[in-house]
Image (cartoon, rainbow, N blue to C red; front, side):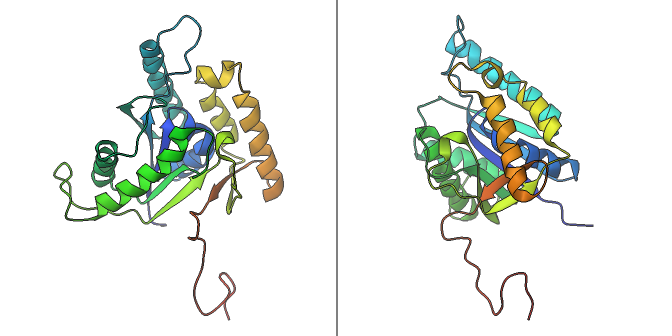
Length: 238
């Protein structure tokens, strides 16, 4: 039996984790691995007509719970404000405490370049939290130190500057469930500024074409971490 891992997907807003790697998350959850979506904010500022920011925050958290149920993953939403994230000790400590408590093996988060400031900050927060969670000199909620094994970036239409995929994952069997999960979000189905549902369905198709499968989703190594050192070509034994 393969080792069971815990994948934590950290998104700036409710909906980011789902659109970026929802199908991959479902694939791993189906295989018996633990998957958690950690949303730093609800993403509540893009309110529907005639709805308050607070009401939409509650709606998005509910939508995230419904999508998580479809995908078979856990979900957590922190109480920070949309479009107001900062790289500061408070949020880094909170994310580091989550890492120590849940003991994830792998973190997946936004790419480092984005048109959305929250998205740009998210991987910085994850890296800072990874370091703090791993160092025994920090007291965080009474939990023992824990280190991730790796961090990867996922694909978002707002984060495409210099994003070139390193990893293609076949999600053909999971894609319809993924689309069903996306449909739980009002903004994905009703946004007048961007056709989220159509884009991510088409993106899965495009990545599938390049992967020689019907559908695929992609991941990217952090800059410089896709270097492989050894005595032979990786994957080709002497």
